[in-house]
Image (cartoon, rainbow, N blue to C red):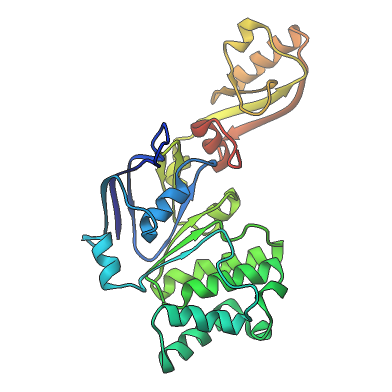
Length: 303
């Protein structure tokens, strides 16, 4: 289990903290999703867990042991697969894997076994002799993942692992990542794709401005979601009607009405018609993860 208690971090010269008293408990042997708009603090948190940064406040522990001490005792137990391609383009797939296995201190039979397992997991057998720069976007992502798995990590940190890949490659990567907990690997997964997090993550945290806005299973996050109507108008509504509505980010003519009553919605539509406001689009129902995210952060995931 990973315990993140009151963790804070501020970059030198930054006016605001990148993380402000973050508290999370991440269970072992699952896929844990981190959602947040750009600048929310996701990559900063990943960097703290990987040891690239040191927290300015709070504590990080694995199974009760301080994270720094855990990393010293188990140098291969935490692996980071960054958003950037973390390999040498001029080396072949096999050469890259051999090099990074050596960096981890693997040698002889252990190195050969680790490379074989990583190649098989990422299905790179047919391209082992190709230079990395010759690979497609999807295969490059698979090589990135294979390198991260060489040390059989207990904690794998994945930062936007499917950026720039085709749908088939994305499906393969998601299926592969979802299998990792069965082999004893806990995964922390950040993504700009809401549907990915919904598909493979057992628990989810939503971050914005360095703080945790919500955390839990998908069912827990959406359990208390009240029904709402979301609609787009052809013109701004009169002030009296606008006062009843919640403006939605991204468009001046999109609004939300929180109500579980269809009668209330019908009355509003009558008022809009009387004010010569035409409803261009209308959706009514309980919130989904994207709607929850937009409501909490007031921003699109990709903002």
